[in-house]
Length: 269
Image (cartoon, rainbow, N blue to C red; front, top):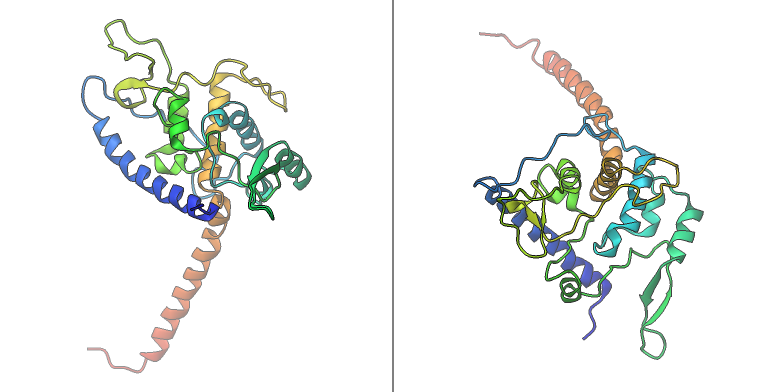
């Protein structure tokens, strides 16, 4: 029996919820012991606070880092190509999105003969996953399963700071540290060792806008991009806050005036 794309996405969605729940337990487990993970560093993000917004240039650079570095192992299941042109997003034009989507090959079908086929991507397509299933992903990563990154910035406690700290937290292990085979030392990960090799090195990408591609810069940019994928309506939500508060304030004044008028002739004890 063939499983529909919607069924697959729902399965992935509920799987992400399960991961989010388990991450809270993981965070607690990582909070004690000699090799406990360090708390994430605090970074001042442009999207924080009641009036915060995304940095469009950073989102575009972050997408470039995801595409050229992260996408080799990590999927982005809940983002379609057309979302890159949405209001509040990275700000790509529709023509740029069409050209980008066409660079990908996606599976479609079945055709009139009942067979699946491959075609060039369209803006309505979702980003293709790097592996066909979890077993293939584990086989290609030494048994570790690279998680989908669509919701990672919200699934992890203090997500943006955690992602940034993790990406910039690779160092050589102390001489007395017992590092497992095939693992890398990272003070911000559980037990301070992680299966993912250091993903970012100086000048790994060549930014289209000419920004120097230092490790800190790339980590910051891709973190902001992943915050957008996790909460693409962030600016819209914050934009509604002030009108909503003003409405509630006016409503409170009107209710108070109505109260005074209705009960003005009632004798008070």
